[in-house]
Amino acid sequence: MLKAFSIKTSRRVEFINITGHLKKTLAESRTAAGTMTIFVPHTTAGVTINENADPDVVSDMIGHINKSVPFNDNYAHGEGNSAAHIKSTLFGPSLTIIIDQGELLLGTWQGVYFCEFDGPRMREFYVKIVEG
Amino acid sequence: MLKAFSIKTSRRVEFINITGHLKKTLAESRTAAGTMTIFVPHTTAGVTINENADPDVVSDMIGHINKSVPFNDNYAHGEGNSAAHIKSTLFGPSLTIIIDQGELLLGTWQGVYFCEFDGPRMREFYVKIVEG
Amino acid sequence: MLKAFSIKTSRRVEFINITGHLKKTLAESRTAAGTMTIFVPHTTAGVTINENADPDVVSDMIGHINKSVPFNDNYAHGEGNSAAHIKSTLFGPSLTIIIDQGELLLGTWQGVYFCEFDGPRMREFYVKIVEG
Image (cartoon, rainbow over all chains, first blue to last red; front, side, top):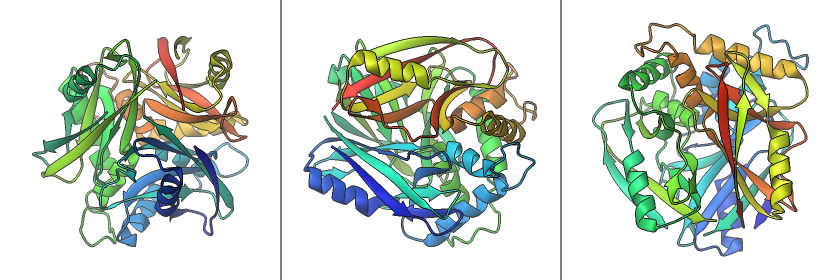
């Protein structure tokens, strides 16, 4: 089963919790066991898992990555968004989560985040379930 | 096939070689071909692959990540472990390894490490095998 | 289906676009739907996805990673290539891409790169397709 999602980001760098979309997709598929792969088809965005409770964790992550990969740093790429490309590679475009007994095997504090590094704009991500 | 492991970490930041657990799990499953996904259900830990021979490689990795993501850096998150959350995202919570002829297709020098970033404490990781 | 590739790198740090190899492997396998896992069996190399158009993006990425993980930094590892080990972990050894309607579900600007961090030398990577 494959599903595509569109998402609207509203800031230059922003992490959006997509865990609800993933759980709903799994419920619709009625898959008891297997794996779920989330894939981001962009080169200036990514996907990660981190704390779903205190929003300060996300703001600390964004603060760190913006500091360690500066927006301007004598980059050669003419579009001016090399920082977003670098962040995309450091976070990565794909994640694989385990499905067990019809549920995503996430930890209590884990949420899945779409990571915008060059917004705001319309974005997509794919969710693929493989039974097994 | 799915298996859960508990692991006890003994330092604040520590990488523990779990390759033996993965090989034993594969042998028990008698899977000839497919993929193995390792998943860490925590937001202040991760998983990586790196050299299994000289322990200085692990200590150099830990030294680098502790320097590039400082323990204290005016973080907002009240629990005081934002550095561990950031390291968790940079390393990632999941890895997929290929299974071929009943063996993990790892390189000669590759070991799989559970990465503790906010220890010491009890931790878990999951191992899922999909045939194919 | 599993396929192994050999690749010759020509610089100390170099990203080589391997997307063509992946597409050809998928075409040969005649797989309509599933996932493709790319795995690098080395501890001083990695794999990433980023822009396939302007080569300045790759040079900006290499410039950033070489600056943030210096070649020399009082590392303990005697072989002198700790920087390459650290970069390998930050980029990661594996990626999973979705297969749909017989095609890799990559975005328009996405290319898959083998990342050499301790070249030049001969390297390998594996491509595994799981139907589903």
